[in-house]
Length: 500
Image (cartoon, rainbow, N blue to C red; front, top):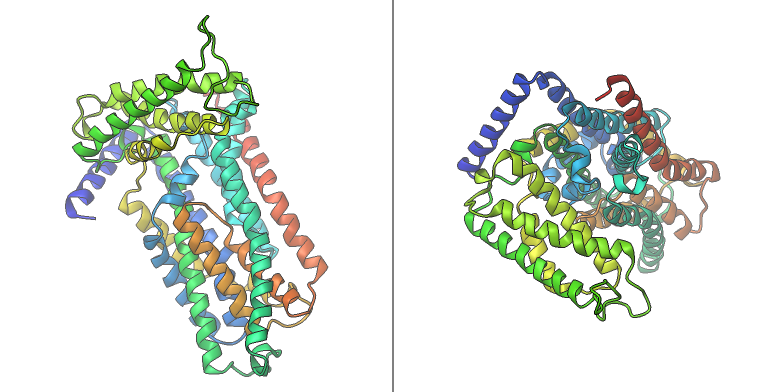
């Protein structure tokens, strides 16, 4: 990040705020950004227990020392995580759902998803339930798409990017199960390697701190979970704030302002390459009467569906439109305000169309680099957004940790959490969250850690408390549908009251 880029970002922010002030939406824009920071603040104290539960419960660190250190690490983690998860969050909805020319409609969407997420997070925190902030946010986003589709008389599927949603949903579903299995296996292996280390596997001695080597291991894995949490969950806050900015100030924030002329030229060539590739598939799918039929390169047992046919035709139109909108531009600043939002939406929709073709059996390996080049035009987050989210997450981490710490440390298993169990559970959570941040998929920090603790209980030959596990599983199952329903309900209610 250089001074020139920072200057460009703040110029865009200033012009955006001036525009919002001129049309009377500045107060609402600031309120939306404030609530986004509040969501990340709540996320901080809601999920802090995942990083500090074992070091506090095993007396490796004093509570406030552990919480302060975790807050600092969460702050740092936001900066080292990149923005791949953030962009995955943004892609959950089609661009035209949030980025509407109707400002009232955009505000309704923003406040609906924020309110539903915050209500669920605060409720589960109050009752000490280790629920997922990731599930809550994603449910809120999907609820907006569903509400938007219903209010417009469309099918529910038209309001959500189901391709990206299925990828995110799969990662959220598999990660707790994988965490449970890895933690159980990890503890079994650790016991086999340290048969004579009674202190490592024995219950804690009241009032005693663990030996220095064990403390170092516990503090080290706690640090890793905090950094990983910041890198993954911090990106969700960044993605949420980018949704708000794209929705309310599309002319300023729908395109990456730092794209060079070389990247613009590459994007034009990429769109052309995609157009040629799809055109070749489409042409070879037509019979002598010009009617689209099954393509020879696709699955021969699967006929060409109407959905696949539409995806082909729409991809051709979108790739041509992208070329036209970028033609003659030496940077994204040269793209007119009228074209910016359309360009953002077209790139997202083109990717969705190509994904539809791939699911239909068409191999498109030669378009991989081209698609990446196109997304470089819209995938970015201003530095000031990352700073705001890092501060919100770091400060939130420093409060409210006690309720969920007690659940993780004392109520998941029927026996006390040993040093070995704490270290293994944290190591598994740290690894899974860190890897997911690198590959760009959101996972639940809460579920990775709590399922890891449950796995270590089974690996130790102990058992888990059925009532606690039942409560956690219910929260796991209910978070998405409840927040989706709340968000869709808020959207429909606000839209009825305001009549945008």
